Amino acid sequence: MEHIDLHMHSTCSDGTDRPEELGPIAASLGITTIALTDHDTMAGHEACQRGCDAAGVRFVPGIEISADPGRPRGNCHILGYFVDANADHLQEICRVQGLARAQRADEILELLERAGAPIPMAEVKAVAGESEIGRPHIAAVLVEHGFAKDITDAFQKYIGIHGSAYIRKDAILPAQAIEAIHQAGGLAVIAHPIQMRYNDQQDLYERLLDLKDMGLDGVEVYHASHREEHQALYLQMAKELNLLISGGSDYHGTRKNIQMGACKVPTNVYQQLADSVKD
Ligand code: AMP
Ligand code: MN
Ligand code: MN
Ligand code: MN
Image 1 (cartoon, rainbow, N blue to C red):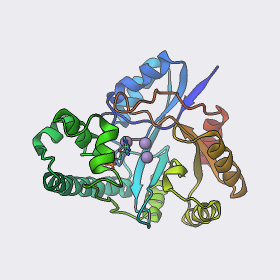
Image 2 (cartoon, rainbow, N blue to C red):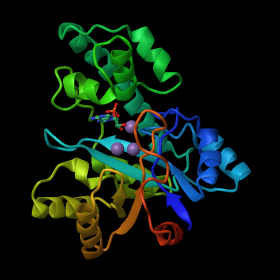
Image 3 (spheres, rainbow, N blue to C red):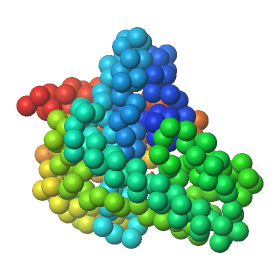
Image 4 (cartoon, rainbow, N blue to C red):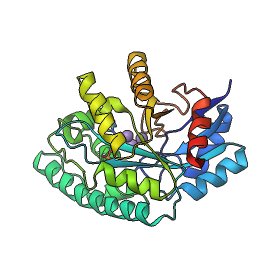
């Protein structure tokens, strides 16, 4: 059966596979279409496209932008699909987000030191490589130093939302992210709605309506962190709001326990997105 996967990360953000490796991995798993959606960067597009071309896999150039959730808990990640990596506004957002990430990394390391878990910035930078620093890179160093038993533990104890060294990162607003994605010729899709942490369905519906007013095009209905009842709910909301649907595994290589293609996404999802971007 044909498989598609429209959400994954490379070493250009916090994944562990190089962007050129993703296409061949997809081909080996029978996945015919992938989108590279690194956090706040499009640096991997060219290499991923090359790898996909060689492997006979269809490539969708994407991005995942972290925007201000406007509330103390939950996140607001906005996926862009079919974006042009040379677009001015989106490049500017990536630049601003990169600066915000560097500053936040300094702040997190200070808090970690106070919490009795000092780690050297040089080691965090070495793990991040050419990528901007994300919390999974910091988590890896915390594990190496024995301050946490694994990545999940590092988030729970220190850098996750309830941790002692948690710092938010909210340099840009959702409306700015959506606008920049549109200016780059792309479609804006709200990632993993579960992680916006609305307990009340009506609150979630109203939030999606707000985002639609800002220009949102779609909802990521299928995601590795969504149970079947979530999928059904988000599918229904997307239909009611006349929003497109999308989905993917959120594969991060070995940094997360999720395989590429782990999330079953109906193949017509790709075609509907592709048709809409041409309109
Ligand atoms: P950042 O973009 O620096 O805020 O880091 C967020 C990334 O950390 C997410 O994209 C996930 O890859 C990862 N992450 C977030 N929460 C957890 C968690 N509880 N356990 C493991 N990884 C997580
Ligand atoms: Mn990530
Ligand atoms: Mn995300
Ligand atoms: Mn992601």
